[in-house]
Length: 368
Image (cartoon, rainbow, N blue to C red; front, side, top):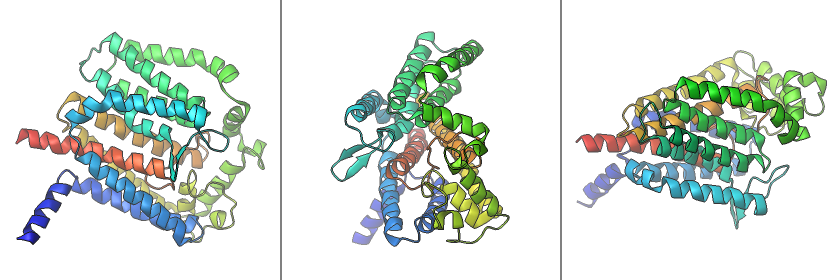
């Protein structure tokens, strides 16, 4: 009897989880543990820390999967406001290297900008969800202002790369909601007009150097162009089948900076080659395909926009990170979802998957 009760309780606990999506996520996480062991000089301690963060992220996924879209929608304004307050706190009390990105609360280090990957799609979906195309100009303007405000708080840390990614995610959700062509043309024109002013007054010199180096990394091979050059060497030297697990010379001999975080894809490509890269990309595509399937089953427009927005956020981060490592995008400091070493990014990404699964599950429950 007790055994039946335990099985019943476990069945209810995992009921909201999408089996296909979970299998795909676990496959990428397994690759993540393997490549982190190699990238961290075969350190069991670093790998265990990464595993703990994955465990916390999976717990966040499970918790979020049990929150109904109705409750999530109700809490969205408060959660977004809390995220903004944390970003303000970073400006005054933050810690970090060249940028203040972290809030340290005892043993816990939190990066509030990572939480925006969740709250930006949430708040845009909340604002635009009640409005069917053609969208209300007031709601679109409000959504743009909220995205701009959050982007500005990240940019002044300064963390321009993350700020641009956050703005791209927010604008993508607005476009997904079905804005008119007039809005699209207007946003494009505004972005084009503002570029000279951003370059002259908003960018710091090292940020300008990153953009210059993007066009010609060899101009400063031992300075600003070093990371990109070493990353391209790592990716190219992997060949068809790679050098083998734990055999990345770029990582083992510390030629490649940030090889467990921003440039983890370079280490992966060097060790597993084109075949391994194709496998990883196939897993990411399968995850995105499943996310699209989940978005079609959302119980309401808020849920559909939220799942679509979270999926677009995932896609943007994957594309930017991989493009950055092979020299097709400026270095932004953006981690590769599910693969890079880091707590805030891993937890926010897995929590996002939990939110997507909740929308599908509670849509089915409602239909029954």
